[in-house]
Length: 244
Image 1 (cartoon, helix red, strand yellow):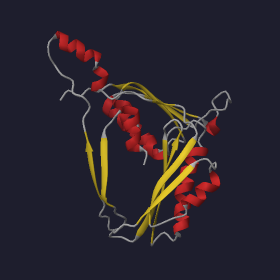
Image 2: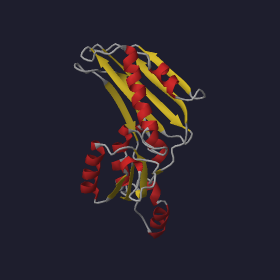
Image 3: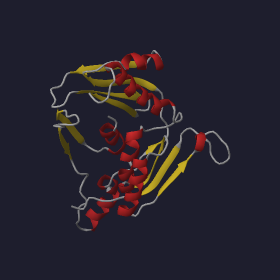
Image 4: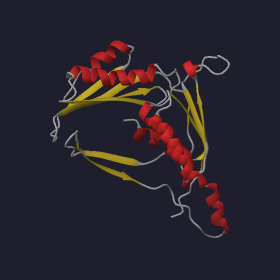
């Protein structure tokens, strides 16, 4: 939802993901194709070439990023796999000037199920996602499935502070990239997810970098001042270079 375009915007990571077939529990059968290119290679050579390499070192390592201002929601788009209901729910909770477009798709899958993915874009270019699944074990109508995805999206947008800049899924996915990047990366987010705690733990072990995590109870700092997010995460990345 938000991972691929966010990496492109923040770090210029080229990635093409094609969903050839969708799969649902319990039979699976989903198939995707991912294509990506490595960052520029660090070349060796004479002193002049080394000097040029030093000047272009940032091109051979992932750049650091900053996500501290969210902006306003300007549009919502999504895709529903044989389901509906999200658009009506979102329309009741978002300003009338926000464009909402949900495309409906029917898929031939091994398991009987439905799903919906919705993505909101802000005026700062940030993306927030929400999703929900339905199957025979989950006794929900299509409208309820759509509303569940919409509610997940709205919770990340409006209950984590005005400058929460990532959704709950992107929160942990950015950790390894911040650890590998050159320079200081930081972002504001909602309540710290267990996946994020795990990602930080292993990123520090693998790279030696140290993350600073500040959590604000009730979105207030130790002095009782109101904050614009629930958690602030930062680290000085190791600037790993592509030497191959």
